[in-house]
Length: 443
Image 1 (cartoon, rainbow, N blue to C red):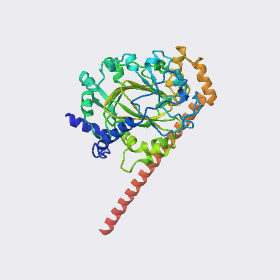
Image 2 (cartoon, rainbow, N blue to C red; image 1 turned 60 degrees about the vertical axis):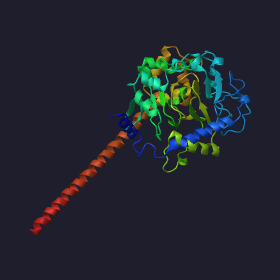
Image 3 (cartoon, helix red, strand yellow; image 1 turned 120 degrees about the vertical axis):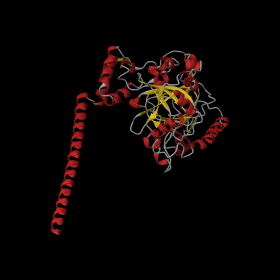
Image 4 (cartoon, helix red, strand yellow; image 1 turned 45 degrees about the vertical axis):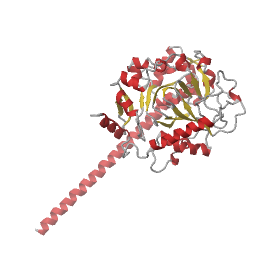
């Protein structure tokens, strides 16, 4: 099978309802979108950060490529503190920008930002920690493809849930000049575990290496790390990361346009399904080009749109809605994690969402002597469960009852279907008997 046939097969599996790769001609409108972004960045003066951020260390007062756009036009009058309501009292400038060279390699340097659940763009991490994928440019897409041409990576999912994979060589070729409305997008976790040469091109920023999930085996812990390889105008629609985890995302090559909404924002407002045209797909490009400006204008929710450039790392705290549009082809890496600052919410989601592995996770943390906020982890978990009125045995009883009820409904549906089928068969037999009698009478 040739290259074109392989790509066509992947396209048809990825978006089988599309009659062609670009029915909406998004690629024809994309250059104007980029031009408008660049024009806005060139004419807008550099923005200063609000006084409420003055207590935070290492802030960068100007950022030439951030190109922040927000619908928040009233400066915040009070300082931020843990538990701040970003929906009701939104600061004007999110994310804040911090320099890794000023933060140094102190693992605790980002804690003031984490304690506020405040999105933060960190400059210079790749240089400070000497990521070879960035400093030696080994993670440029064409170099990865040349070094590992047959390495298979995940580029999407079929409608039936099957994983779609493509070789790095084919993907790099596909990305060059891609004009698909719904581009294939590499979001692969396996290669960072199986290929030590590729994974050797980076290491988690020192500020995020305190990850409580490390106390659960790689086999049992939820997926958490991904290599990103993206064509221009690919991206992800607005979502919240699973299990209340936080994330960091680093761009190695290319650039990304982000949108952030506070955790309290309503799902129907940020996803804005009602704002799409009848024939429009809810791809990232459509969202950023057509829907997001309408959300900004309505001002029903605080909204922050900005650009992330090569070498920059974005910290996305637990619960923040976010979406991404790749402004150009590029490569990056992202991890999800759990630390002291989001542990309470992660535990609440995990005890029901990962009800079996969560207790093995707790055992692993306890065996390692993990403390959360200075409290032994078992005591912390007990206090969370008690405060919530949550009981493991009661939850399991309720889950089993719901499962049994579902099984009974399924069995009842199966029984009714069998009875209906039987009635049809009996009716058919009676009709056949009547026909036989009619024939005899005619004879």
